[in-house]
Image (cartoon, rainbow, N blue to C red):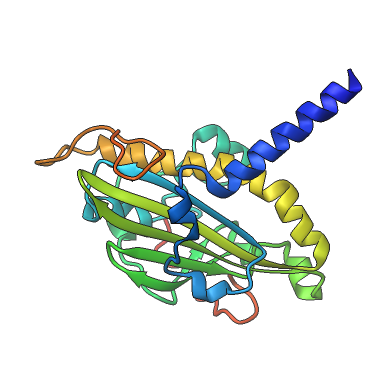
Length: 245
């Protein structure tokens, strides 16, 4: 029985680890260079996810530029919000006009303001890609004492496809020391399957719930393209912009 439990646990972890790196993305998408890759060239941890949305890029983009803590959230399911972001507000269910202006250099909070945790916008082409970078996703005391470090990017890339948009989400991270890198592989990647999958599905639900436009279908899926269906070293820390009311 003990051996069965160990084998089952190992198989479950391996499955979640793989899904945490690849869920929804094709092999070509995982190997293809994307906007934002250049910012963390020596990444030890990389994950690429994707979803096909039945809406053009111009209808997807407004949902991306309003993300963030006490902004529009990250569109994850409410139970995920409660587990991962218990102090955050529920993710927005509509486009928030006052959150539609986002520029390179802006700070996107990803935690309570006293933690100084968040992303800096490092690259942006409207309706094409949004790249966020952080060196602040560690406890503030660790950062101040230099115990550990993380440099990572989140890249959202929009590609028009017949009937809609292919949305790719890739994150790349360089971590130190070795035990933090080990922890990222052991825990963060399996957990990312839940978070990223929930976020992409949340975006899909919101985008496709909007009034349909000519030539737009109402289905989306996670899977193959065309399917229907930081405040920290090296980064500036502007004051949080466009807070969500």
